Image 1 (spheres, rainbow, N blue to C red):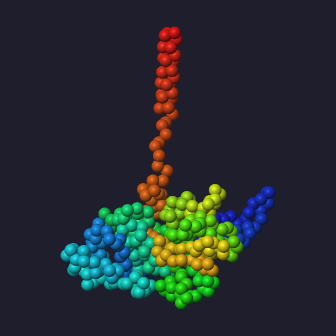
Image 2 (image 1 turned 90 degrees about the horizontal axis):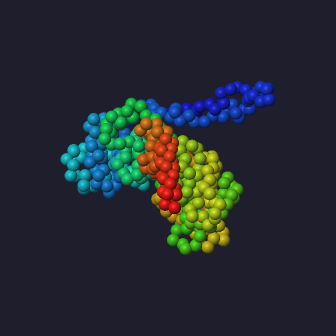
Image 3 (image 1 turned 180 degrees about the vertical axis):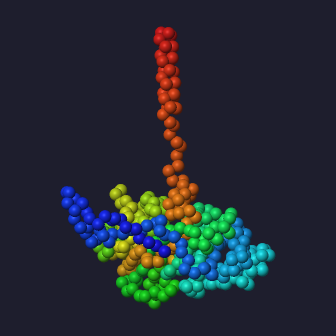
Amino acid sequence: MVAKGDIISSENCIGNGTNYPAPKFLQDWTIQDSRSQRLTWYKPPLTVLVIKKVKDVSVYSPFVQLVEWLIEEKQMVVYVETSVVGDAYLDQFPSFINIKDKLMTFRDGRDDLTNKIDFIICIGGDGTLLYASLLFQQSVPPVMAFHLGSLGFLTPFRFDNFQDQINNVLEGNAALTLRSRLRCVIARKGKLEESNNNGQGRRGSTSLLVLNEVVVDRGSSPYLSNIDLFLDGKQITSVQGDGLIMSTPTGSTAYAVAAGASMIHPSVPAIMVTPICPHSLSFRPIVVPAGVELKVSVSPDSRNTAWVSFDGRNRQELLHGDSLRVTTSIYPVPSICAQDQISDWFESLADCLHWNVRKRQKPTDELTDLTHSSSLDSLEQNELLENGS
């Protein structure tokens, strides 16, 4: 699905007029060509998981239209959460009653969807995509997200002509953005245990994949958090402030940007480290390579513990002696583009965050006219003053 594009096309390096064979590391140096990330179905998709925004009346009607069309027209097996089928409000739609018995259901945290789903459709806001990421803690099926929420930074599709758009995707006419995730492992008091599929280990260890960010903060304590930060086993700094955000490029436009971080395109292989209200004038956000391991622990002389949350969920306390390890996961989220990687991202920046919105500067001809008129006004005022004197 993903191809590589060569950076070095020449077989020789040229310097001082002499040709030298290119070093081996340059010959093998490749980067991911974003244009080659296209959706390819090795077999027609048969099962689809539909995730809708909860507690939003405006989503019910589109949800019913979508599910009915997928079942009746496309002959697909549709999975929804058990709580959706039990929603009494949906019984007000006669078409939903007719297809209700044809829906397959699952229970979050109990049923394993691995290898059961070919395709995911989200309708709602960005939270629906984060929920899809949470459901699949390993390989994730391609995700198509429709914007019916409030922000919609991660949901590029409009629902108006959903049939044509889904047909295009099913035919393989779509680009992909491979959104990297962070693998977060908490080791309790230095004892790391293997976790099960729910992310919980036998001694309380936690292993979760996050799409946006993992946040370590001071919780309800009135004291500064005092957190030690390590990179590949070497301590690089101690964070004194409200906390620390470790985010993916996708998450750089979420909590991190509100804390002063830069915005990174989701195709860039990197991890962003952003302090939250640091008690320092020189602690700026940094970007580190995707291949490193970050470790966070509560400093031994810290006055308080810390709290950690994963994409805003599973909040838990980080005690003295505990550690949190963060690496880039090998399981990204393949997000289907409405146009392409570049256009979708910049449209989201403009539409959702109003990036670089300001009044246009006036052209030079108008400025010349204004300058000329102001000069005439000044001359007229000077003449009046001279005549008056």
